[in-house]
Image 1 (tube, rainbow, N blue to C red):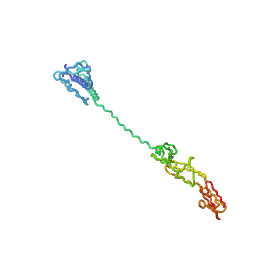
Image 2: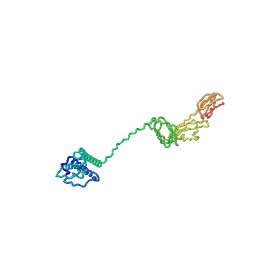
Image 3: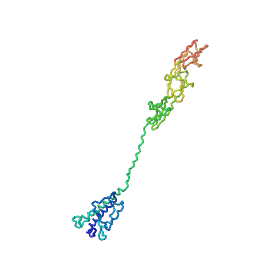
Image 4: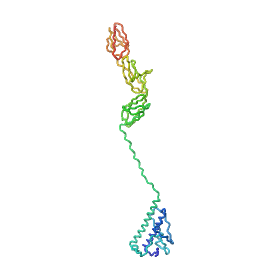
Length: 361
């Protein structure tokens, strides 16, 4: 029976259409692959006859919905000029009537399901092969990475009741002590100073400076001091010798003694008067500090053989006898004037010890 005989049952013609579709799929897949795929168990090329397959259309995004070329189906199902050309490369030729296989006999119930399954399988192959081709041909899409913004860090909590103290000096390199505790050398910034009032001492070869600084919480206080020498001027009713740590200090022509800035303990002595005292003085850089001596008064006792008046440095003190009269220490002139006439004059040095004068007319 000719392959394109229109007397074939419809099921046989559907089988021939399935074979044609399978050959078309293999031809299309050979154009997509890098190396054409050789058909499995393909027989020798058969003559085409008076028809040919249409060229494969370019692949589109709707591969899964492409249909089998109408030329193939019409060439298989409809005769054109008496004898249809054989199908290209079928794996299994159409079964003739009476093949001996019951489920392939014309009119068998399973034969229709076999035809439909072959057509579905051919369409599935087309969809898979076309999808793989489109996937490989599409440009690679870079993976998107979600940008994660860093969470803002919370500002460190301010320390309660703590401030800073920036300390400098001229010249630099002074030893720093805060509230009696050594803290370093200038210039220095202390960040752990409690809020409140603090005593700061700067000490160097040029002198020592003591200052009181108030520090506020979460704020910075500044102390910048020039450390260089100052001057001391001593005022005394009598001459004294000034010394410090056993070293005698000499005054200049302005009666000033140059000392390093800071606190000094000065010893003031007048051996003739028996006067010996230590005084503390604060010397400021570049300033002159005055030291006024006011010795405690001594005691004066005056007696006379006759009633008389007692005068001290031109000032009348009283009448004799005079006992324990408070008078300044030093060199004085004492005049004793007798009431009946006549007087006696004396130059005396009254020191720390009580002084007694006996006058005989």
